[in-house]
Amino acid sequence: MLDRLLLAGVVSSVIGGAAVAADIDVAPQSSYYPAAVTPAPYYDWTGIYVGGNIAGAWVAQNGISVTDSVTGGLLAAGQGPSLGFGGGGQLGANWQWSRSFVIGIEGDIDALSNKSSFSLADGSTQTDKTPFISTVRARVGLTADRFMWYGTFGGAWSEDQVSRSQNSGTVNGAGPGTVESANRSSMGWAVGTGLEYAFASNWTVRLEYLYAHLDGEGYTFPLSQRTTETSAEIVNQVRAGVSFKFGGGDTVGAVRARD
Image (cartoon, rainbow, N blue to C red):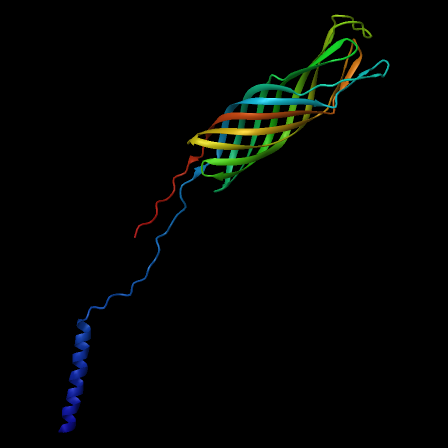
């Protein structure tokens, strides 16, 4: 009889404990899942653009020599660099390779006002004008949203207008008052760097420096039989420009997810 009473007491205790446990609210285990974060919006440089620029230019004719084609005699010659200004236009295309990296290609042509002269002991004066320079270049840029710093390199081409005036005396077939002229083309390479800023979705402004190294050329004036040769033509430009870009622009980024 005692054994039965003890067994009944144990069973009642177990059933009662289970019932109490069932009535207790157990808080579910909590886990923290950080909200998904997407990249912030950034400016997209991709697109085709067209624009204009103004420039300050410094042009130097290196290694000038003048010889008499008849006698082979060398005349002393020297020509200092010329300062001028110019302006023109550019056409190009960008491709945003990644968030911070842009590659592109650009072609431009600028008219220049640069002109320099030197006088010789034979009574003549020579004048060299550089009316324009044109380049086709690759561009590689690093971006920080609307700012882009870029380097550029490629080919360059210019055409010079050279004139010779016989001020006094007679040289071969050129008497006093004789004016002769010649055009010469030069090809070479160009490198530069610049900073560009997108001040609107499709508008950018830039400031850049461009260095062009053009091959030397030789030319002979037919009446005076004077041959002028240069070892190289160097063109330095500091340019400010503005461009309108088709495509790209502001990129709409996703909004941070909410809990």
